[in-house]
Amino acid sequence: MPTHAENKVLPHTPEQVFDLVADVGKYPQFLPWCVAARVRSRTETEQVADLTIGFGPFRESFTSRVKMERPGLIRVSYENGPFKYLNNQWKFSEDAGGCRVDFFVDFEFRSRILQSAIGVVFNEAVRRMVNAFIKRGREVYGGQPRAKPLVAARIQTTE
Image (cartoon, rainbow, N blue to C red; front, top):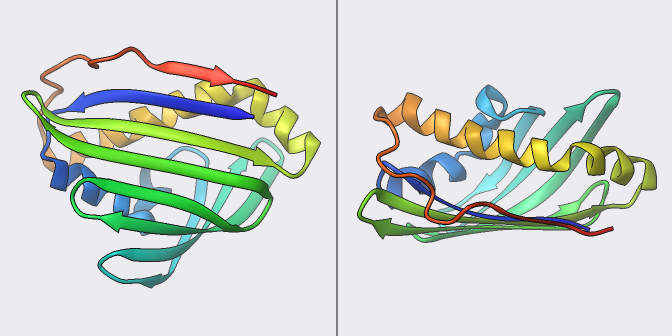
């Protein structure tokens, strides 16, 4: 099913980028198609959050568990909602240009209609989401990217 893996270097510290990704409650402020977010519970190492995504005529809510290992790793697993499965991982490491981010997402909707709809726009949707985090980093921490991505995006879509 749709899978995306990408590496980027951002001009921020791993802690700063970790904080951007871990701040799920603010996703509707900057993340395309995220129309609502509610953090049900949060500790230093884990949070459970409800997100609502909307695109076109579709609006779906789901619950995910976010495991956080500051400052190097965030793993998101699916709890409840319209997916058969959802796996998402962010790795953050020091780099001469700031922070190297390794991003991976893999999911499948239960509904064939939703799966077909996202398949048409998947690559564009992920590109916009990644760019939204880059823009948010500039807004929150300032600066322009000092380095181009280390590795071009690797996109694999299977159905």
